[in-house]
Image 1 (cartoon, rainbow over the protein chains, first blue to last red):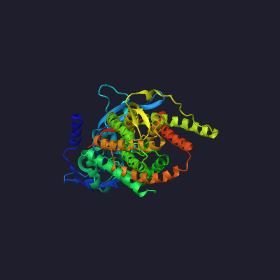
Image 2 (tube, chains in turn brown, purple):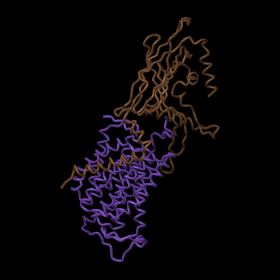
Image 3 (cartoon, rainbow over the protein chains, first blue to last red):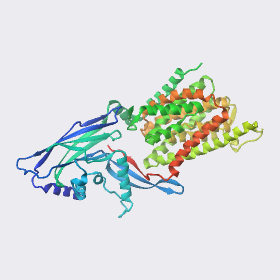
Image 4 (cartoon, helix red, strand yellow):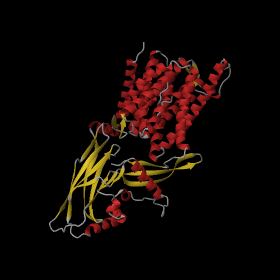
Length: 254
Length: 308
């Protein structure tokens, strides 16, 4: 972790004085989940500020936006044939994995920077899901399969996204990124890290955040179920009983 | 029309859930079963987390069995004393079931336990019903009357101590096998999201010789009480009861059941049991396929610690 931080510092220290600066703004800082929630669209606007002393660059800018949802632990299980049955056998645990990752850029990541630099800057799904083997093993040859499976399954669910066209430049120094939050997105804080690059070299980085919360009724129900479980259960049971009773009254055949 | 479920934490198609409730309600009305063994798997197949499916289904079964209990109560077709003994056992079973459920969920084996239990339980019950009803149909074609039990012939469990006389049912049986049965039904109900009527009714008829007139009402009383208890216990311990999902299922189920009950009157007894047997066996096979067929995707991801 410290080594990575050092690398980051070095990476940013390279182009001498910070010539460019980012100004970021999100279309909303809070997404509220209500009964008709099926996902949300956010727009991120960014402006690139340059001080007068900066020499004009020959090349154009690249922007990479990393959206990271709240982190949680996941277990990846592998089914194996045990006799005639296919049952979960082997498993690996991955801790502090973002529940949602979107890496948005103005062109595909491999064209923006090399693999090593992307890893160093933790840009892209691959860099945000670090390999985590079993602690007891020095070398875990099966681990890559589990990690690949985790990324494949989350991509299929639309929770891990890489889009090389989601960032569009409005002018030479202004850009816009379209962030799509799916209906199954988990609740919590989402960090939006924006990295500005040119010629595969990072120039500056800034971040902004938004939160996904449950709206009025949904929030109250979820809180009630969590904090007043017994009461919530009794109320649900009472609702079931009274609806069952109501049905006998409505459909009474005498 | 999409609707966000606050506890399951995902959007779901309202019409699909109402439709599922109505379809299962129709079948349950037709066969006089709770339909939990159909609804819980269906909910899991459409993507509801298994824990939410099982816990929420308890509330739906409570509603549908309330309707049943009230109808039988009006006709005085239930044995309250027998019901009370069964409920006591059922509540103990439900308590143990929810504890087991929470532990399996914690160590990540809940889904495997649910799949295997469905295969074992529905498979064996479905298969024996298939054989029994096929034999009955065969016998009725030939015009053979089923052999009656001769006097003085007793099964081993009839000799057990702590016998109680149940006047309404006209039986004199030991509390021990009754308790074992009701604890088991309560346990299975809490873990699998089923009422257990399809096991309870035949067991009361064939093992305890409870008369057909009171058997359904009495078993519904046990299911009602255990499912109310299961709803509260699931809500209190694992917070997986989704009240919005429960409401949608109950509304769909209530209407489906009314039409199902009318359709059920047109089917003959033996065919009736054969159809139900095929249905139960089919659900078991569906779960069996999951663990017998080489899976297209061998890996699965489970969230163990909720991101906050």
